[in-house]
Image 1: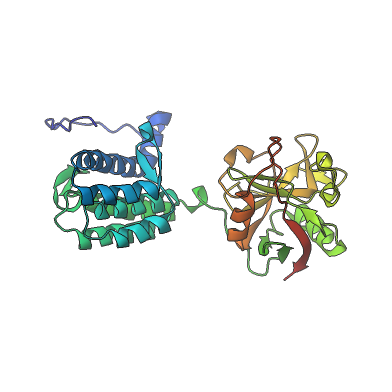
Image 2: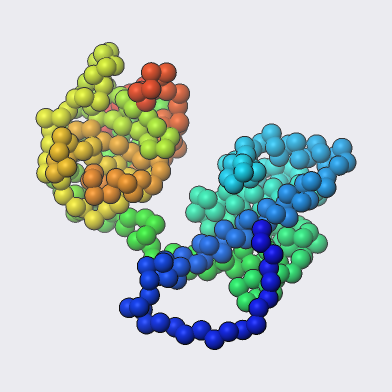
Length: 341
């Protein structure tokens, strides 16, 4: 990390908005996110230094527990990564050890990556309460024009980011379906997935989908393709059969013109498969996303959102795949029926 140096104040002339470059506009919008990233990186500089000083056997055992519970990712693959719940459990187990505060810091970072800002702030509050003398809590820095610890600065930044996101909600999630929107339950061999549909924004897709649900079109179809970085694909009538080479090729006779529903490909949406051309959308095959995929915006039509059973979606999408590279699951999950709620 570069050394922080103090410079004498200089005068700054603010240009009118119309004269700002695209980069300047970007910085003005996302400075909060950059500050949070800086705080995380600054914390890891201290983390790596303290870890390098750890020699005692008891300390080494605690670090080993952290290493066993996480994988290394990020810059130079030196940042441990795990589910927030795993870090929370480990932080409780290792409370009072040298590793305890770092595990709590990791929990906050993991929650931040999932955009659970309030929970990340709560983890940092626990860190501050449990380890008042730790460098992350006690050492004073000058960040953002205010004196305070890295923990104090991160908590302030999370509060600022939460406030910023609340006024820019459209950048992070689609609007909720209006009250009274149609709802269905996909009954699968692993459990139910509930969907709420945007009948007001994608009426043609929703109408066709509901008709196919009522007719039994999807009975015994399988989620024929899975990808933890995308989600799961379903709705192909060919997947009822045993010829796996034809899975993903059926239902292409059921189409409707592409329409801009004004909805975006955030995690948890159900989106129609694209037809043979850019202006054609399938009303049979669909995908349920497990990650934000804005590369699909403008290409496919979002017509619903998961309102229950997202854990089932994640379980299906993260299952083992066949070794042929097709993305076909080794043990496909079947849709036994779809019920209107």
